[in-house]
Image 1 (cartoon, rainbow, N blue to C red):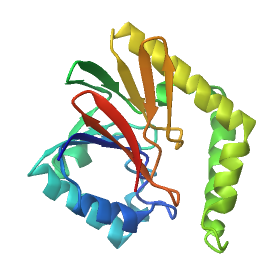
Image 2 (cartoon, rainbow, N blue to C red; image 1 turned 45 degrees about the horizontal axis):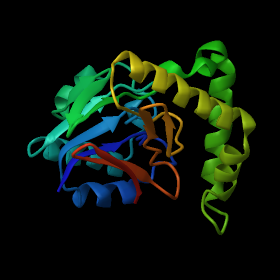
Image 3 (cartoon, one colour; image 1 turned 90 degrees about the vertical axis):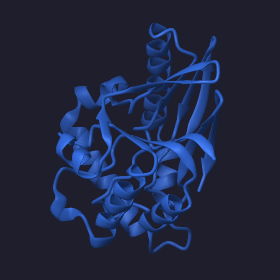
Length: 224
């Protein structure tokens, strides 16, 4: 059994949420604590939730009766305090854990994204275009081929991801912590600067879904 499992960027309510993989993952989950690191929802419009999306919320409710479940606020989640009470989870802006000898800071990471604050309208348009590409990617023989290619070849996206990692590491230094874990970028990666380690838990909106395990201070990125 894992000490802690971290997932992020599920985006319930969107057409690109890997709902089947997520459902199986939760059914087979063995951990003492599950941390949802932001963007559980795609938007605050619950009319977009399909029946299988509601089933995920039910699974989280059932899990919260057995293990500790923490939901960290993401930029897509909106004012989610009410929903957090309905599904029996704690809703916070960030979470700090002590695992082994390691002090670990966990937060979504959107506070480090200057691009969103500087260009909110462009961000919304680009986000919709990207999701449209993901939607029609399903017709390609390699599912999510074009969207993954765009994301990983975009200099703007990669530079933004690196900047978020650097700012997160600086933030971690202020806490005198060893490790910081973010989501938000949808790109699972690790980075080290000095004594601080940065991890990104990736997302559940592409063919390769990722998550993080924490056991006695050891942090690992794994794929589902």
